[in-house]
Image (cartoon, rainbow, N blue to C red; front, side):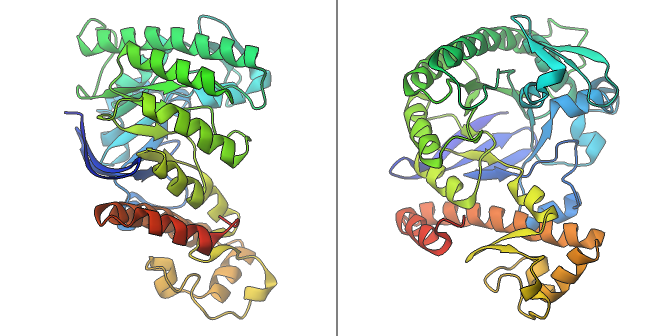
Length: 381
């Protein structure tokens, strides 16, 4: 039920098809972030209209509210939120580790207090597997330790080695659930796959070691974590390039939490197949919009009488129907529609950029597309 095949290559860049129990995803793919089972400001119908084939939701938030037990009783996350296409669930590790003053880390896992009511919880590698099995996502992520940047090499090694120990525990639990040896877990998707995560901070040797040892555990596919946390862009690209050659060529490679449009195309060039990022949705709600000529801050007064579409080269609903002047008015007036129309545009821009990357790989023009995008967007990506 979980398969991946590469259909086209150009250098290290790949186009492929990822088959899951809830449908096929064309790769390279971008996953809109629906943290709590919904992408803020837009409906599932809107997401499908933008071309979304897979969503990302979050274990931490759904575990705390409404609870994975409740969602399992409702038939799993797909049935609960009314989304029939694939879903990937993050393990919740990033959210837990970002709590800082509310959590402690030890060999067992992450002990934290809920941001909702202060209640105490322990998230272990096994618990992360249990929750995601009950949610029934198509892709479940192992629990890893997210290291802040910058960190010393010693700190990065200790974190990476703990993540590897957690990886083995999480994989063992996942396989026990898959084999029916955990009857207390109400697994709602028997075809669920589990991804391992490569860590290692900003140190290439640690990244290589983590990649080799994580692959040796034997996950269904692999992700690269711990990047887009403040490090320079070129360092991120270099660390991705160190990691991808060590990941199986016949499995999808997922770069977690990245990034700008330029980050996407540069990471595809280094062998990445899957992405997620909050930038298009979060920035939309703040009035920052991505266009084919760079970013626009729609709140700026210069757009008050600008009758042009947001991006004349864009085919999204927002650009086909509304002017910059109107979008600025909605934002200035605090209208809910401002967030909706801005989010529709930004998501369409991201998803269309990935579509054009896939098309360029099909026709062998990826390198020229990459160069053109860098010229058009420059440093304003």
